[in-house]
Length: 585
Image 1: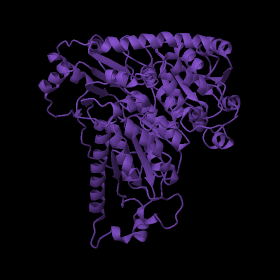
Image 2: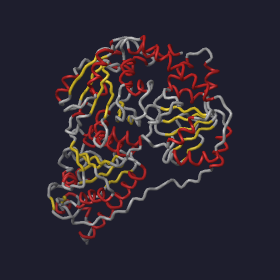
Image 3: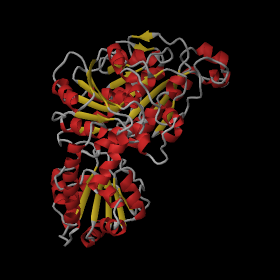
Image 4: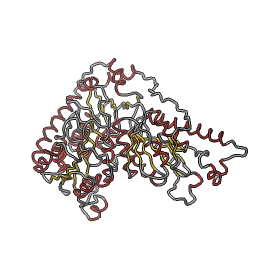
């Protein structure tokens, strides 16, 4: 087995291995050669080569999101590291343990005009769980280091003692960084300066890093369950909203209790991975008709909860945010071990525990409350579902009808990735099979990286993966296809409405050349050519009949991935969507 001759490179590899971190995504470069040598020559690690660093970071993020374990992304120095930033920000807000390891130039070569050199230390300072800036080894390339930075060598120094101090410091930083990633599900950044030569290798490890075992920590905060139960039992209108949530994370027994409580309504989002026939999965279909009602003030007050409980990650629905920011609950609790966002500007208590422990303890003292809160809003649900069915039978082929057809036809147990913008918002309006596991990068809600994330996530998935994305998001991340790890059972649906269709439904939209160029960004690129470039089978649908025909073969086994391009009318989609809310009202 080969090891880099540079001690700090040996330490990094050793620390990662000792923590059981197996998956490493590497982008090519020279300065990161010591790390590449260490990771790729150890059969313990599964290494993946992704050229584009922005894509590589999202690929690693998708893998970490799926595994719920840390995954490493390794890059060379300079602007390569900056391309990681979108994925780092997503990992920060979505609590995904992405470990960024960047090779750096020595400090004495920064800001002197050396190539591929920027200020890399703590570069993600505002969006990172921990920044470990390792010290440069002086036992490697000692003469070069002494020549360019003699200040690193005090008078009467002992090379052995100085190097030992550096290794001790680096060990401490690595212990801190990896503890943060594992315990807090946070992204961390490890920056390591390397002097040339970079490619020298050894047969045996020459150092003995000190690795502190990582012990998973639980919140030690005292929770007054009597107080919480008292409030719960007094409130006749209790609302739960579940945002982004890992599949199968909430015990179904607790969900059943909530579903059969007349004083509780549960709003779920498509990203919540929570299902029950008594829950309300399309928030906007409940709120939009109220907004259009002559009695909206009365109806909003009837919907206004006394107790609001939120759990999971960020929420997609803008309408629920607008409603609860105006009609505030008396109590708002957020359940999360780590953090609580005051999304509705009404947070009264952050309960630092996981959802199952919360429900287990709360329900020990739960009592029945007389209320018609659930029945009132369940009737609303039944109404909009019936009206939606009628609406779908009357409208022409557009985004709305295409999404309903696609969502209703996804095979059981698929892993479903949704791109942001229009895609995730349309998916909110329709029911999905409970067996599907749904993911979306809602931390920053960007359109960048959706394809790369889905492909990274698919690597370790037992079941096939489907990505539903819009045309702009897909073209934006087309380098996500530039790798050799695409599984044959990968399926991609691209809703091609020739631009950023979501901007047509936003306030201030106007039909003008300026709008089409700078907001909607109309495009006429040919997806088939892109598919040919990356060896992906291409199918096309332009109406309901051709869509159903394409879907009849889309999911069948194949020798390469399959992409279904669904072309919809650019100038009609927004009218059909906005009219839907009028129709169900």
